[in-house]
Length: 81
Image 1: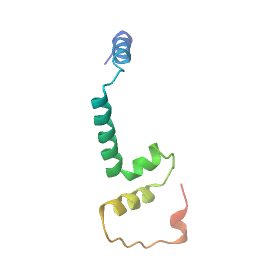
Image 2: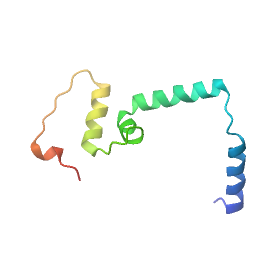
Image 3: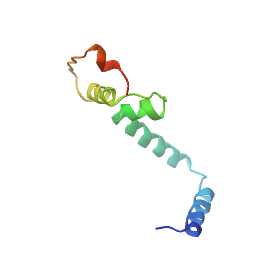
Image 4: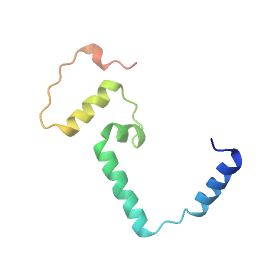
């Protein structure tokens, strides 16, 4: 467990280390791009701000990983929560 003083030290240290080199920025962009390409449901939620249900997340990830998809849906499947 981290106490408040240790937490403040960590925060202060991280604030002073905010200046990133161009190379580090490029690495971060590549890592985040790769992460979001592999997790399109999280991209919709985090970057686009679209709140989707569990089955919609499954379908988006399924479309991302498979070339052929079959979907059997009914009217009730579109209802959220």
